[in-house]
Amino acid sequence: MRLRRFDRADPSKTQRKNFVCGEATLDRWLASQARQSMESRDAVSYLLLDEDALLEDGRPRIAGYFCLSSGEVKIEETPEAMAKRPPPEAIPAVRMGRFAIDERYQGAGWGPELLSEALRSAVAAGDLIGARVMLVDAISEKAFAFYERFGFTPSPIHPMQLLYDLRVVAASVRIDP
Image 1 (cartoon, helix red, strand yellow):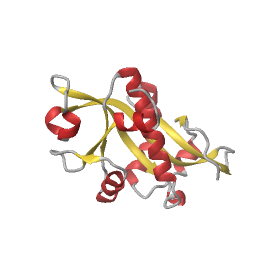
Image 2 (tube, helix red, strand yellow):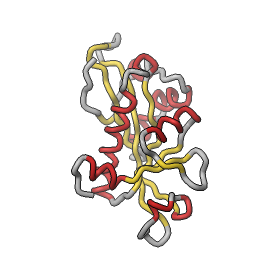
Image 3 (cartoon, helix red, strand yellow):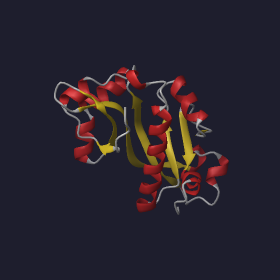
């Protein structure tokens, strides 16, 4: 399998119905809501496509996806280290609303690879619109542990919410924040 560039989601019905990550809500969202979110600009989705696994419609299998949108985090919901010199009421954020890897690709290193791309995309978005953190709401304890393993910090108020300081990503990939 080769990693193809991450595209804005424009999946065919065949691609969407063949995606199974083990979390029904994430499968359903991709199958029935991703297109509407793209069209309404509520969220922008990106696909990890396996060009070596073509489906019956001739299009590549979706190995994973994530979606990003703008958001904010109230100061009191932010870990103390991230709340230094905050704006008056809330810290601008890039929200990662969905993140999933198809079951066929889980455990093969594609989750960290896709998360890395999501963080770089969030830095680029934050550069355009002004955002300091990436915000995620973990869908399960397993997802929470995944994000925590990669340096996300739990919210001091919301038990399943985590944040990542985008300035850390910008510095590590030599992107000016």
